[in-house]
View 1: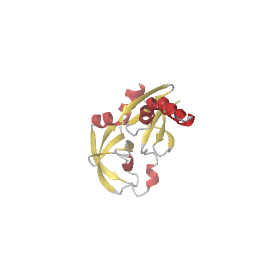
View 2 (view 1 turned 90 degrees about the vertical axis):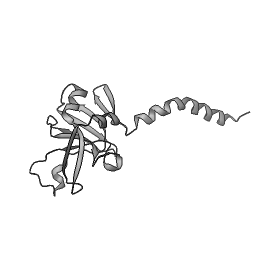
View 3 (view 1 turned 120 degrees about the vertical axis):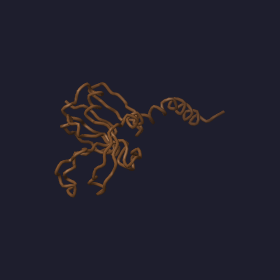
View 4 (view 1 turned 135 degrees about the horizontal axis):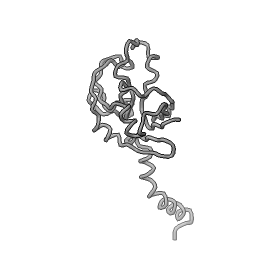
Length: 160
């Protein structure tokens, strides 16, 4: 006969076991969550990588070097997910950074999926991040000029 606390632990384990994969999936860098009000959709990062059709080389001010970028036009993805380009978006990152920004109705914003031909992981400020394809005449030596670039994106919520 098993002691009562062993039986209790076994029962808790059996009850929680079916929930475990769902909990892992909710916290996985393999998914980006798009939310608008009560509606939420989860988009696989692998699917975004497969769809990435924008390729360019530019000077990354944070790395201080030329890099090859692959990604998607962010505005197009927003229209697909929300039916429009929301005025403001609230971003949540994997490092728990949160920011709300506007001005996304611009094809210059690219949701980056690959850097120098390799898929972005958390160590590379991924799994996806936002950069501007053309940052105009801003001085790349002044990193404050790029405060609206968002890294390590976990979730994107349309704000009202």
